[in-house]
Image: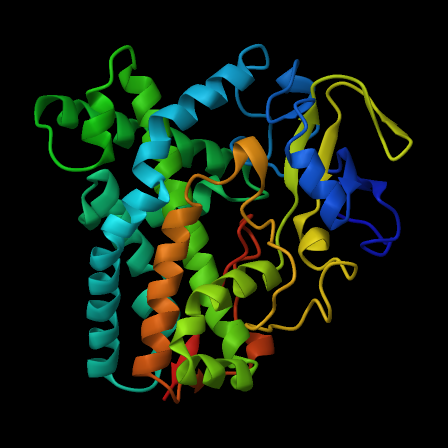
Amino acid sequence: MTTDAPQLACPIQRVQTLTGDPAWQVCGYDRVKKLFTDPRLGRSHPTPETAARTTASPFFGAPLGNFETEPADNARMRELLNPFFAPRAMRALQPQVEAYTAELLDEMAANGSPADLHEALAVPLPLLVISELLGVPYDDRGMIREWTAGLFDKYDAAKASRAGAEWFLYCKELVERKRKEPGPGVLSKLCEVEDISDDVIATLALGLLLAGHETSVVEIGLGTLALLRQPDQWQLLVRRPELVPQAVEELLRVHKSTGFARYARTDLVIEGVEVKTGELLLLDVDSANHDPTVYTDSRKVDILRQQGAHLGFGYGPRYCLGAPLARVELQAVFGQLTQRFPTLRLDADPETLPRRDDVATSGLLSLPVAW
């Protein structure tokens, strides 16, 4: 997205996406939060082949779903998956997440200082957890990471299409195996549901594998970086580990978020601006999470902050299903990191750390630390 206007210069303004398509950028906490629940907005488009795009990726830059049935399809999907990702289910998974975190940190400690926290913890932990939860072979993690990078590629549509096709076939084979040899995990449970095809389960599996690990990979890296750049906040967590859940929410808030893409399902008016059916809106969560009318000194990490719930996971009927899982993982990470490595520090200039600028998630490629 490109615009020279200040982020909160106006509540809704015309911008261009990476693909050069026109879009409406909507800013501000209250406004973005309200639009998340507006039934006149959706992810699908009446003529998807002509729709404005956010990136070149056919999976994360274009409309998703069937325009005629989108609300019902979304409700059905959430009905199927909610039980597996509800807070209660995640609390049951928490001991395993804590154990995986401890094992990875044991290995990092054994290898000694310095270390790359990205490779030692941020990448393997979410993959271990989502593999356990879904019933997917962890040994396939290399392919999953490669497909993830392909699907999220903002510029190479052919690469994204190949990754999507290969990953879907992989998931289809997984579902066929689960049909024949059920085991623990969400995929086997989905195979027990009546009137759900292998293609639908494979599509859900792909989405869960992708969203269920990539966001946490990014947040572990950026959250650790944010804390280590403010050593007073790191030391506060060392002294007061009971603040970890609150710290996780603050780190999720302060992380620069991309806009949530929505398409107008009908003509509507936002702040006096006429938006036509099919036009693209970008709900600017970054402006919402740093709205100066809601948050004081909004770009600063303050784990004691009590101002407003962030919108990093969205809001309303499309609130991220994986939010409880991400919270369990992040709480395990920052709870154990601060207690086991109280002297942890960055081992490189934070301004020179390499990032994945070619993918939509824009996470770190490495995070050198020492202790």
